[in-house]
Structures are given as structure tokens and as C-alpha cells.
Image 1: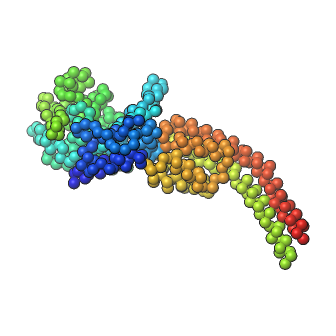
Image 2: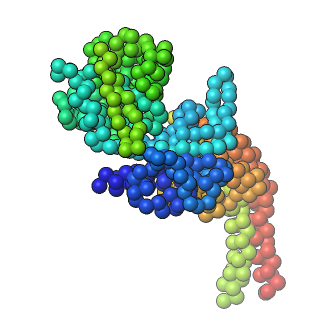
Image 3: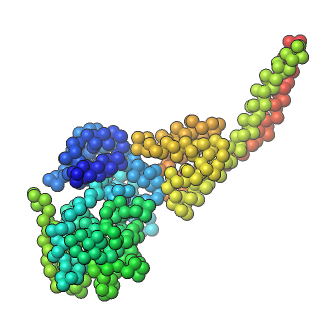
Length: 303
Length: 169
């Protein structure tokens, strides 16, 4: 059942491809479709699929430079102008929560990157929900009946967003813990994959989602307007995000966030996160490690 | 009987002349309507960042005649986006709908198809403004052509019919 649903998500991601690439992507057997995490397109090279064990070519014709803008045209329903801000940021989230990473030649203007032209490669990351992914760590994030603010850490592609999404669902539905109201600042639209006001992923019954706006603004708006018990955000990267999290922590709201990194030592070496750790904004750290058998989680009590 | 025959002989060439004149009269109107529709597109893209499917649907409802049909055809064909590019959909709509475009107006609209759907707002607005400029100039040309040739075509049709009647009688 889960394999079929993961394969369905692969097929939805493959629907973003031009016909001559879509066919070979859909011809993969169901097990491969379910296991594949990314589709990679590089101009002049064969299309590849990324599996947990590595990247493999998919049989078929090579990707041409003309295919890459066509993927964006399909993904935006011929409305690239509506997604320009995201494209300038190097990625685009499409309905269903799939994320397209974009590489090309930057066009600068007024001191900032305004656009990407002459696209050279795209990485379509298949969004996947894994109900139950949070169960191995959930009970370690509570103390004395209180949810402890938690930071999830791993290198890119190790499953932070999937774990974060399932933790949000568990907290919101009370699946394995007391139910809490969760506010989600979904800047990139990957956590809930909102489509016309409805989340495409199960993020729980007591979850309010603010998507498409900068995280720090989303967090503060949720804090002011929705009276959350837990605030969640993916990929904390900017000082503004940290300031908003600190303010929320001072208001007694639990935090559930993710960040790129290797482990606690790696975080301590970076001023942005060192500051958050020193101020005890987070009380638990979950490090996600990829092993041959799958994923393992290491939970550390920070204070 | 001879009178009926003469009337029929007169009516044939006269009809050809009137139809040609009507075509000349319709063209500036069609070009001005297209110009208005493209201006609306540019405004929607500038101020509301409206996605193309929604924009085409609204234009198909707003404009009657061939211009409305052009956008309705795009909306219909966009269901198959992914098997066809937006440029192909636009080109197909231009050939299917009787817009009666020629010369610079036809070239401007065909060129617009290459930009639709795959460029940022700034480039899209630039292309729309350029197409609007071409359409406005083509509408003025069509107006002058109607003034110059419109009545002449009607008179020529009637005269040719009359001449044929005289010759045959």
C-alpha cells in the first residue's frame, strides 16, 4: 500500500516531464518508482533517478537544453511569471509538494539575482509522506507532559522534511502523544503542499499553515493570530528566522524546526545555530543518519 | 423570367464585392479587439500575476467573436499541456480561429507564442507591448485600406454584375 502510494508520487513527479522523457520514467518498475527520491535532468546527458544507494541513468533519449524550460512551463501551467520569485531563489515547489531545484546562468540586476536563464540542470525531488516516520523519536521529545522544543539536523536529502512533516501530524492528531495546536510556517510549500487552501499532505487536524511567505513573517503571524502551542518551520537558515523563533520561545510556544548540518558539533561551529543553542531555544536535537539499512535517529537532550 | 435571370446574374458579382468589403470593414475591428485583449493581459500580468489558464478563461468570457474563440481554444488545449508546448497551443489556436490576420499583425502574434508561458513577467510584458504596438499599427493600416478600397469593392461588384447583365441580354 505504502509502496503504491510512493510510486503514485513518482508518477505525479514524472508528469512534469516532456513526453519523450516521461515515457522512460514511467516505465521503471513499481519498486524502483517507490524507492526513487529524485529525478535529475542535465542538458546533453541521460536523465537519472536518485535512489538511497545512489544515482542511476534511466534508459531513453538524452535531455536537451530545450526540455528544461519546458519542464518549468508544465510545472507552472504555462505561467512562469507567477513563480519568478521562487525561480530566482533556485527552486520551485509545485502542486503535490514536489520541489524542482534549478541551475542555469544567473541574471543580475540592482545588485541581486533577478532571474535564471540558459537552464543547465533540474533536480525534481519527489515529495513523500511516510506516516509513522516520527514514532521512533516521538516519546523522546516529551518531558513531564510537556513537548520539548526540538531541532532536526541532517545533511540535505536525508529525510528532515519527511520526519518534520510526520512529527507535525503526530503532535496535531495526538498520535502517540497528547494533541497540540501546531502552526506551520511553510515558506517553500514543501511541508503541507497547500493547494487552494487545502494541504496535500496529512499534517494533522489541529494544524494551521501559513505558506508562501518568509518564515520569520509566517512564524510571527501565526504566533499573533493563531494561538499555537507548537510552531514548526523547515530549514532555518537566516538570522531573521532565529529572531522570530527566539521571540516565540519567550512566549512559551514549543518549537519544531529543521536545519542543514551534520551533528551538534557542526551546529556549535556555526554562529547562527551556536547562538540559538546558547540561548536554550531548543531542548532536544534529533540527528538523522543515513545507513545502508535505512535511516537512524540520534536524540540528544540539550538542556 | 428574363428579369429574374438578370437579377441573379447581377447578384453574383455584387455579393462578391459586398463580402470583400465586409471583410475589409471587419479587420480593423478585430485588430482593435485583439489589441484591447493583449493590453488587458499585460495589465493582469503586471498587477495580479494572473496565471495564464485563468487569464485566458477570463478573456474568452470577456471578448466575443474570433478574439474570444482564440482564447477559448487556448483554454481547451491547455488541458493537454505537457504533450504540447504553450507555443504549439497558441500557434494552433491562431490557425484554427478565423482572425483574418495578415502581414505584421500575423507575425507579431506568432512571435508572442514563443514567449507565452515560459518567460518572466518583465519579458512577457515587453513582448505583449510589442505585439500591441504592431496590432495598433496594423489596425490603422486596415482602417485606411477599408476607406480606400471598401466602397470601391462594393461599386466594382455591382458594376461587374450590371455589365454582365447587359452583355448577356
